[in-house]
Image (cartoon, rainbow, N blue to C red; front, side, top):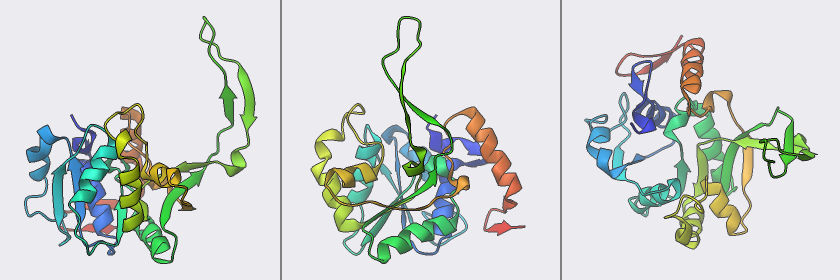
Amino acid sequence: MPKGLVELDGEPLVVRAARSLALAGCLSAVVVTVPAAERDTFLALFPARTVPGTRVPVHVVSGGPTRQASVAAGLAVLGPEVDVVLVHDAARCLAPPELVRAVESAVRAGHRAVVPALPVTDTVKRVGTPGPDGAAPVLGTVDRADLRAVQTPQAFERSLLDAAHAAGSHRAGDEAVAVSDDAGLVEALGEPVWVVPGDERAMKVTTPRDLALAALLLRDDGVTHDGASVTRA
């Protein structure tokens, strides 16, 4: 099934992610891009066409063959009044509202492209081509002091993100050449991208182990959902 439909503590990741965005209090709407074949399934998760527990409108649109193409599809339905856009992964459903506000505020403060990120704590090696036995030679150790692991939501001035997607549209249809995040498209324009501190709760759910870790974070954070609101113990 699409990752957004996977449940965490009985609720789909996409619903949790949408609520975290909405509870930040700085968004006028949430656009959810989904596989075209599953659009009706996702629509059913938002029966009032709002984020559950809030009054923030939700628009569910069919995405494309790549992440880049899906974001472009979401941009296409935004009205001209939208001047700042946040791009988020449903898989990072526990990203807290304060992180959402941090990236949005940074754009409002004059930084046109902003991403949250955490310092890399592992030692990182640059390696060469593996041999017949699968072992690869180490070519060097990368200085991790300047490395950051990027998260979402990423925030952009609307006009800049539109321009970045237009310039990179030739890459959007092929997963092999499409960018893995929107900041990459902005970088390709030669525009600066700024980093603000990320949050460990904004981890990405990719494997069953990640899902189990997210459940632990959810429990430890004391977050419960009663069907209408989110409360913190």
